[in-house]
Image (cartoon, rainbow, N blue to C red; front, side, top):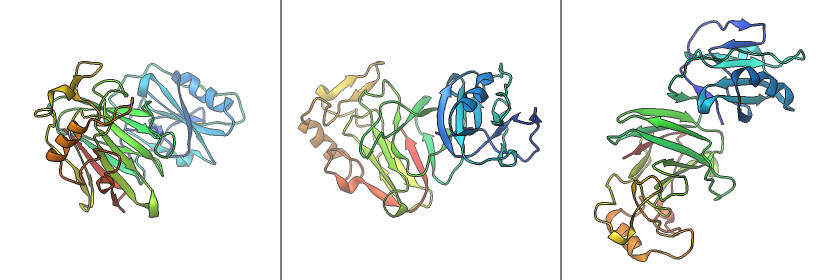
Length: 292
């Protein structure tokens, strides 16, 4: 997982005690992240085999991003977010940094070659979770990060090389019925593959597109309006959703499948697992996702 990006700026970084500074970041080379206080981050890094540098942010109540590899202070990137702290670990005792910074909204994630721009096309604020697969075709139900997006707003996130998983509008719990926006970066021949899936439910329309304009898939209509009433349910937080076409308990909701076939053009969503024409590839590493 990458540390939070708050806007790169051109300025000198003021290194405190020679080993840490505020308002800076180190790109890539993540090992692991832990939720700790700011003053404990460097110590955690020093105690972790292979950790050579770190970044601490206010994200998720305070997160220490431990990083590996050869690094120098010249590799640090200045940011507009003065709450961020970056540092390198030396052979001396662990360094400490002050806490008590003001909480700022997370707007953008650290940039890399794989970028996804997430837009809220609805009228209400939404939270979007990023769920990285635990293996090939093995979905996770623990979000590695989440972003809050206001109506009409677009936020950008970077994803690691080879990232495979889904984005999901978090109207309820991760296991609740929901539309899945599935994406795999750097897959076959280094291509990016995207699809919208209704197999695990529906809680809103979504559209994938590539920044270069060569890929577009998904739909914008609210499928709840005319759906068979027996498939309309409320998830754990009371939000109106549609049931999965193939529940976790097994079987298939054939009437719901038929309804989707009538209302979603072929190739624009996985309705059952055999809908392989709904998976679309592009050489573009910059992808848009619109959520309705």
